[in-house]
Length: 584
Image (cartoon, rainbow, N blue to C red):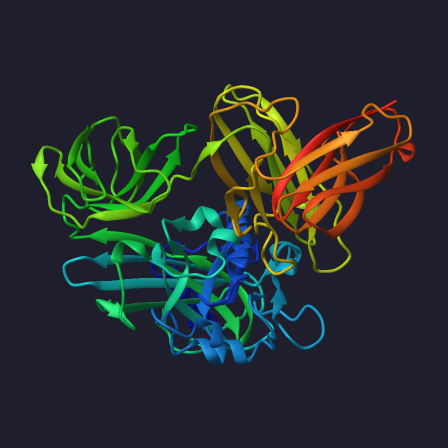
């Protein structure tokens, strides 16, 4: 009997030594699988994508995201849905998007769905919890046959709660360019021109809806299985690019409670030797009032040979094709580099397309798919003299600031942050802009949260109005983290604004008490009066009045102001007049 047991033990050891090849046998904590339920028509989903990206960056090789396009927000073209998404979502109890599950764990109540504000704290809990099983995978992808082979291994360092577990193999795809509401507001770094770069998108479950059964889940148990899958050219008419494929494997207790998971290490075979791809075009607008800008092309090497030189052809608005030879570095297989092109010039305030293609690689002619980007450099012409900056902030005004820069980069005027409101709504503020040199100025309006000032908490925005009432620019406040305008100033502001149509005077000035604001109108008009200190802060509002053609007089009680210089703003049907008032 002892001899039989000894033989069985030796066979078991020999089988283990042969079978278990790469999964760790050392006890470890759980890795996190974040399943994010999302959709291209969901305006707040890009904020969830951003949080997931930050979590993965903070926990490399420990936390992995799966973006599952599902529900009504995912309806439309292109179709990013899968046959698996609804069943996955139906077991979570989600009530809104984006929602996510952290290892499908129930942290409280009976649902696994969590709002994006909870993902960080709940992930940290799972990352600190011991796992009874380690799981790993390796694979190959054959470019000639499009066949993907994945070998999965699971080793139990402890006893699992359930006597059977489920192994899941998920096929994901990165770098899918397509539409996405809220992308430029909540995750602008993923915008490529007008398209959004979708990452970690679920395309297929190789093991089916709930996975393959693991029958032995006690300490020392070992499981391995090999899967093959031929990649179709597309799924739901969305191209399936081999170079962008990612495979995740994870072990779950039935349909819920994921114990741990990992990313498969995939080796590519039979790749084309030379195969570059222009993944993205981006631009940086020069801080000038002309059409100059810098364009950058991100090139990915999806061939097997390293790239040492590229000949790049580029053009603006279908004009003359220019050629640029790049040989600054080496781009290894399956890596990317960003190439800065020579300075370009576009027509200002117009949508114009920049097109880039690769015509030669390592000295050999090459024909690839061109990439294009529509640009629009915003330049305000005919600015100058006195100007009024009208800023309408939303509920979260504490996130909003702005700066006017002189041509030499020094700050002419700045403002914010401001006070938040207690509920959704807007606050209108006016600031006087007095350019003191002729040249190209810069206006930048910032939102520290990154969703602009018109994201559903009040329809904010801003305008720049010249002294003669001409509106130089209007922005609807949907700008993400920053809106920038270059302003071509051709005249400096005088001590007082010169009225073009109507006239405004103040007497007495200086004053120690009441003073009279005289308003001469060429027509009946609505008139708004307000007083600002020299820091641009609104300190007194006299409200709107309907005044008649001719001379009108309004009394201002200046005794309520401390001694100093103030600005009295009179807005006549949109025509802005500002007068200095000296209070003694």
